[in-house]
Image (cartoon, rainbow, N blue to C red; front, side, top):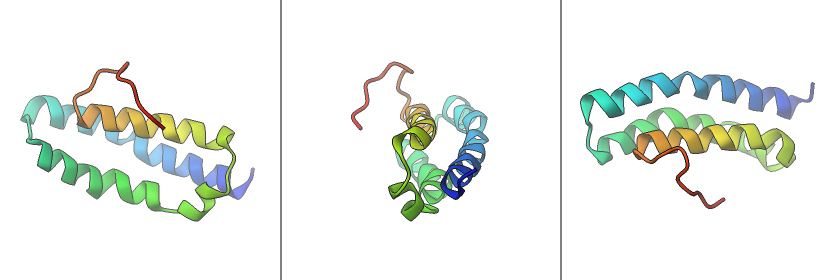
Length: 88
């Protein structure tokens, strides 16, 4: 397996752990948007920035899974529906 694909799979597995946490934070606590933004920048953003040089040199095939997950996490924190349009 290529190093870039291995790194992307590692980041993907780390980010999938946040789905349940973010959903519960959003629903139960009704936190204000500023706090949700801080949660995003504390947990998701560093994972995405990790190995950004490798992401830049990786093909779209490997990145698509990570991009889709990233969009889903953002939708949860922004209280958007699953079919909310995105621009990438």
